[in-house]
View 1: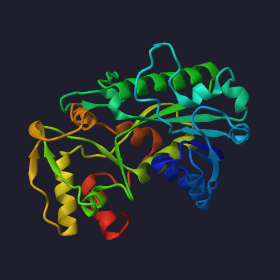
View 2: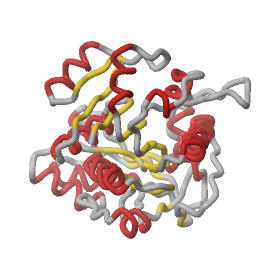
View 3: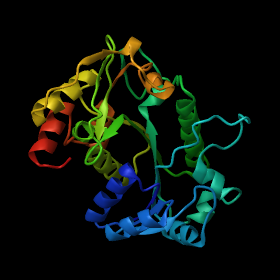
Length: 298
């Protein structure tokens, strides 16, 4: 397998590292030379991609790739032209067809977000639930999803769309927030969120790549929970007194932070288990945080 990860950031790098362990050759794009050096240290062949122009190195990688992971988000702001292409990779390709650029390509995986479902007042959603995004960034994601699905229809290539919940893992978690002195417990009545450990994203995408899985999959944990419960449990594990609860309605929040709390839903992961055979190693926040703390992997 020759894999190209477009956007080797937090999730993309974890996917690339897991694929390497399974014997794949992996290319990964990043925007800076410093990050490229880090990818190279991990065994990933780095390519600097500005998100707009195909470099010779990226064209060469596309010419070899069999499995493509797209982890570059579209712009948050909606374009004036409703018919304009929003996905940066497809914009960069321009008039060059993907099959011409990547003649050996066998599968595409697109990383999206459960934000596309919008608000359901705490009710359960699954892959059959229609997307009804409420924010600009989620509407952009729906458009990008549709663009990659259209590529699949036009080329006959299987396209897996992976809707991810709030991502955490080593270096990005409640423990680190406590360590930085930025922990707080916001309380909004009835509010729950799903989460996903980056390691489960990595194993999900590698399973899907092997199976050349087609369609939409929610990659998310088993236990949607109030955010303040996660904060409290992390403080308990660290042996640190949790901060006082803050009423969401009177909290000083940025418009973006407040918008996240406008979407309240419980997201099912049953399809990922049944179709991909995914066995979540970090299935809920309590299991995950306990394991991360015990293994000092945070």
